[in-house]
Amino acid sequence: MANKRTGLGSRRYIGTFLAVVLVFLLACTKEKEEPSASVPADCQQFLDNYFGAWKSKNLATLQALCYYLSPADRSRLPEGSLELWWEGKNKLVTENFERVTGMFGDFKSYEVLRAKTTTISPQDQPAANMMGSGIHTELVCKAKFSKKRDVHVGLHLIKETEGSQYIVAAWNFEATP
Image (cartoon, rainbow, N blue to C red; front, side, top):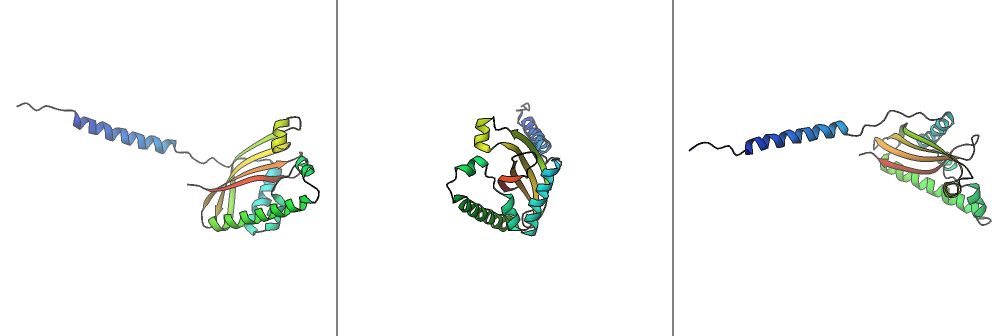
């Protein structure tokens, strides 16, 4: 009887070859972290102060640098409630600091991975009403902590005018996979 080839042997080699190619493609396309992004000098100074407060565990400085409240929002608050808002904000900053340091350990260092700056004018009513007019800078930083080495920190900074100081409007700390 003649030997008949079924093609199963060649299919096995094709399957193995495709698996190797797939692994190679995944390895080549894996997202690589970008080099440090440049930021304006005043933004860099703010980041140095902000992360310096993390490193030195200076909650008073962190509280002063966090939570933007636009003049329009301030004017809408009932009289006497601004102090309550500040107390609540400071409590939230303290709780966030304790939660992040509990999860990730002591802050060590940071580098800016991405930065994007947008100016929202008061005439751009929908955006100005929602986010506040001024200069908005969105950043992604890679921070090193003592327990969890790499943590991505997302920051949304705002300053009302070119000459004013930045303040943190929103933040997010997330461990990298």
